[in-house]
Amino acid sequence: MRASASHIAALCLRCTLVAGLFLGPLVAVGVARSEEIKIAKSGAGLVLFVSLQRQSMS
Image (cartoon, rainbow, N blue to C red):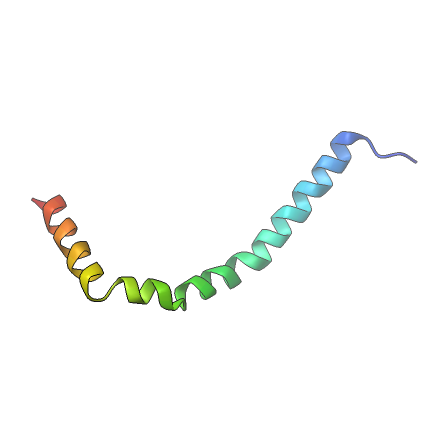
C-alpha cells in the first residue's frame, strides 16, 4: 500500500514535533549552563547592558 504525500508530510511533522519536545528542554539547559552567556554579563558587557536598560527606562 502506497502512502500519499500528505500522509508522509503528516508523519514527518509529528516526528519533528516529538523530537522538538524531547530535545527542547535539553537545549534550554545547555544554553542556561553555557559559559559564554555568563561571560557576556560581566565587565564591559554588564556596564553596557545596565546603561542600555537605564536609557530605555527614561
